[in-house]
Length: 632
Image 1: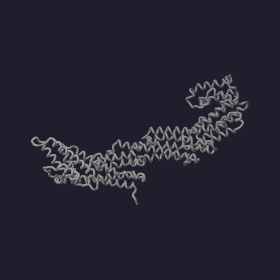
Image 2: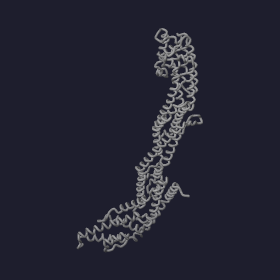
Image 3: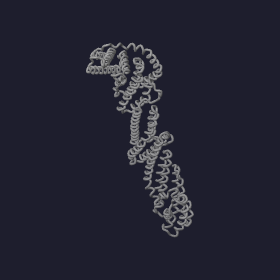
Image 4: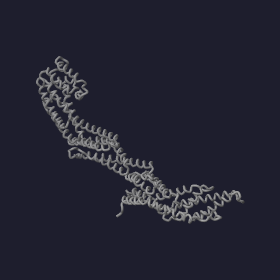
């Protein structure tokens, strides 16, 4: 069975960890072995300098044919010969010849140095010549020591370092992404090969190359540094061409988790936990990953909206919880997305995981606005259909009120690390739910207003038809309200209760009807009965506006009071419980009672004067509950 790319990656880095454990022991062994062989090698590679050098052409031929020993000793002979000829006592030396000879020497040394660079650069090839590399290192060492002498060429160690860097780059250039289009795991495989190349090459440096160099070259450290720089350059190029989220994740994981371990095994740093990747590059990778992750999150949120649109289009009935509350998967899907994104990131970098929580929370704000817009446009067709579709339209609103409240509850776990973002999202959810709730309330108001307009009329006194229709509408909305979770259900029930109570009482203020003869007692009884029926409905619905319940009885008592003068005895509880009732409102009740025609006369004053005193004693009516102030 073929190994998966993931298992191959794990194998390589398991190998690296084993290599790390024995690194210090190998290093001590290499250093001791190198020290014991250094003297004999110096004697072996140091050749006798001839008295007279070969010709320039012969030396150049030696260099081209990799005969470095012959080339170098003859170059040294040429240099010594030039030094002798420059002495004042040397007779027959031509200044022109000296200049030409110096030029030839410089050109030959430059050619030699280029050849040595080629040898160093190709030292990772299977066919490289160890003796050739060893002698090249000897030449570099010798020329480094002679840099202080007149006419010596500087920069040998720098040239060697550049050759090492070029060789490392050549190795990484052989790693390609040719299989990217055919294999979804090709990027992970590519980084696997990259890590393998680094591990193998650094192992080879320790086992094969280290002993070929003089001790003071710091060979391993140089190769570690060059690989570090080359891999960073390689990662930058990869980053420029990346588009897939999975590739960003693999790159980020490689950069933070795997990349440092490639070099710490060979590093002499005391702080093994210090970051290896340059901060600018690491931040760029993190930023690119977060942006790609953010784009993916936005795309997933759009997918959620599309899925919900299918639900509305197909008129699917919302699901219910075990407690009977309407619900959808929208909040669950969003929470799972955030959890999975953040979980994946925290495995790589905990701080980055916390940062992306903030990104997700901020991205939910425009999502809520987008959802509301699409929801409103996509479900309005249900209102033009039959009663079942209208009920479904109401159920959808309740469903999302519940779902977004659940979403708000879930994100509270991020409050400690993202308090400002959580607070902002809470406000956005509350405002959205309020608008969804108000949409339902406005629909209810539109539905019952024509029926409420018939209250306190001659028709109302004769028949209960319109009131019974109102009761039916309240009963239906009450049943749906039971599928709404707290605290939204409480607020919704209160709003419906307040609206019905206000509309019912406001019809008394319209002066559409005035009781005659004994009709005031009949009207008072009806008001009491209907108010009590409404009271029972709203108690079952869960309204907490119990302060509204006495109002029907107070007004009913005033309307049925036979002795007009005794009305003033009924004003105290009315004014105390509803301090915003005005003289205009009281006159409207008296008008409905049918005992006066409204104006300021003696009979009215017998009621209004005590009322004025009570109002004065109560104080500012706007400091208490507001009810009559909402009635024109």
